[in-house]
Structure formats: C-alpha cells, structure tokens
Length: 297
Image 1 (spheres, rainbow, N blue to C red):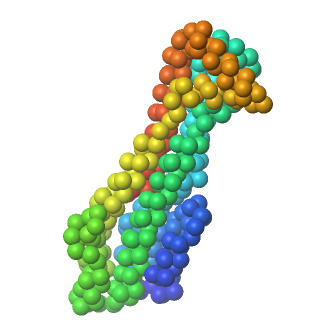
Image 2 (image 1 turned 30 degrees about the vertical axis):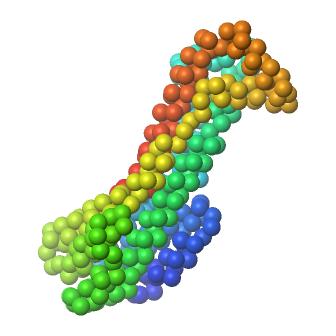
Image 3 (image 1 turned 60 degrees about the horizontal axis):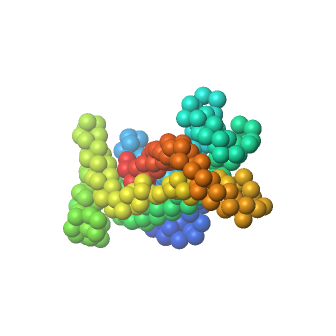
C-alpha cells in the first residue's frame, strides 16, 4: 500500500529543521523527523527496520549529550555515591587533610564544582550537535528526495530511480555519495521485492551502506567529542579552593601557594590524579556512547 504523500517529511521541511539555531530544539525536531521518515518507508516494506529507525534512536541518544545530560548523570553518580565508592572516600579524606572542613554531602557537591566540567561538556555537546546536524542535513535530505521521487511508485520504474540517483555525488565518502547511491538502489528494490527474505536482505544491505557513509562522514566530530579534555590536576586544586572560599579568591590563591610551597599537596596530588582518572573514564565512556550513537547505527 502506498502511504499518503502528506505523511512524508519534505525537502523544504528538512531544510527548515536544519536551519534551527538552538541545538537542543533542533535535535528534538531531527529525532521526530527521523521517526516520520522511518514510518513512511516501513509502510512500503512491511515495517522492517530501516536506517531512519536506527537514526531516530541515535539522534535521541545524541540529544542527551547535546543537552549535557548523560555526562552529568554519569559523573554525578561517580561523585555522589561516597558511601560505597572507596576511591571517593579516600579522596574526601585527602581533601580534609589539606584543611577543607565540610560534611561529606557538602564536600561531594564541592568536588563536583571543582571538577568544573562545563568546558569539556560544552566541547562534547557542540561536537555531537554538529555531527547530528551534518548527518541530518545530508541523509534526511536524500531520504526526502527519494520518497518524493520513488516511494509513491506502484511498479518498478528504472527511469525514475536513475533520475533520483543522478542527483547523488559520485565518489567515496566523505565527499562522494557512492554508498548512498547503492543504498537507495537497494531500498528501491525492497519496495517491490515479493520474497520476504529477499526484501530483508535488500534492507539490511541498504542500512549498512548508509551507516558506512555516515560513519565516514562523522569521524572528525566523533574524534573531537571523545577527546574533549578534562581539567588538569593543578586546575582542579585551584577550583576546589576557589569553591571553598567563593567570596575570597585572594585567600584561595594564597592557600594554594602556601600548601604547594609547604609540600602539603605532594600526597594530595595522588588523590587528585586518581579522582580525575575516574572522572575522565566516566566522561569518555559517555562521550563514546553518545558520539557513536550520533555516528553509527
């Protein structure tokens, strides 16, 4: 059954969403649009999974990083469970040994402030947002074109298929669209396949080809998101003391200099290194999941 054309996201709608200035709102619209694209193709292929279905999930996951939710939740879990995480308990003891006197819960909040994740989180958020937009602006655009040109056909029409494929750039990714050319040919074959197994094979190959193109195109953004830095130990100690003396930055600086000169931070540096290593692993694990969600199916 050919679905009504009014259900298809159009090329102009794709362009409108891509032009939205707010990354979080744009991501929500991208996710919804992928959902509609996935349903439209599924109406012709027996509701089997297509790339747009995977892209819906991936865009939703990417949105958590764009809104800085996944990294914050992960690090808050690592820092907030001081009763059960020995490393954090040891670190709290080390903080108290340099003169910071607070109750455990308040101290955990102070540690979170001192980690100052905003820079790294923002870096990851921006990289994932660019990747989310890059994929959508290119691939969703081609799906919208494909739907308009080919999806309404009730019988195989090689001429309309070739006319659509001629609009794709020649060459391998990241600049060319040869993988997309092969993928959409497979999607078109799936529209008219009478054998369920054959249709599934066409869809599976098409999904892989779009995913390969997408992954190649997004590699720079994935690497950038994964390599977003966590602050240095020295900056962490400075931030910790600044948070402890929020209204007296001069005192925070003086205490830091005195502690460093007196050798009180020699042992403390080991705690800082252990703490930041754990925080860095948590952050990078979240970045890896979100970046790959944005760049892989």
